[in-house]
Length: 261
Ligand SMILES: [Mg+2]
Image 1: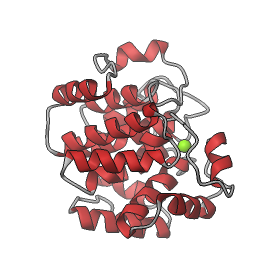
Image 2: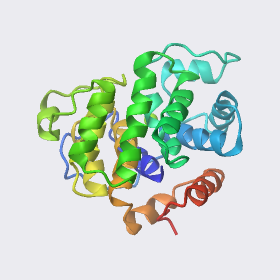
Image 3: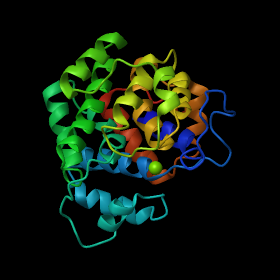
Image 4: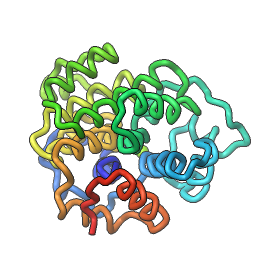
């Protein structure tokens, strides 16, 4: 899950200023910042760890970080009295799902938690599927499945075309915030990668919704490779204290390695 925050951080400076190559420097730009992807990922972890309602948690965390580059429709929902889902199939459902893959070792349970985490706002079938496909990829990566097998399992589950390379995707890829137009590409970026950092570089290099693509690729890459300590430490220094305590509790309860201190 920390991999999602690092992806968000790395991608934050490229969302509105795409850089369609892998050689950007440094990995974490001095002006990088944590965006909505991070706030909601922490909110999902907080909800499931502490038995809070998801709507409650989203509105609480949204209120703490009102200037987080929120999507327009989500922002109207977040800062209103409204608590009903609005049929979204935006990639917000996938960018915030990573904690659920750490909360269970049982795929059916993970898919159900992923569905719940999406459905409070993103209750369109494509929204739910985007969250579930992402959680599934993280789950299989945690179990050590080969990346080609993960591609097939995700493709069978979702119907996504997982049979493309990053080089094939890059030239024609355009900004697309739908699940179906960004989740498969983000997962391919993570599954083709040769290291954690390479996955984030892949995700930036295709352009589009960079912070969210990298926030989806990040936790899959984390599950495959772990987070190199230097990157973990640099990113951790940017994480506010109230988020840190949720993240630390998640890693304690999941028994995962938080390469942050
Ligand atoms: Mg964002």
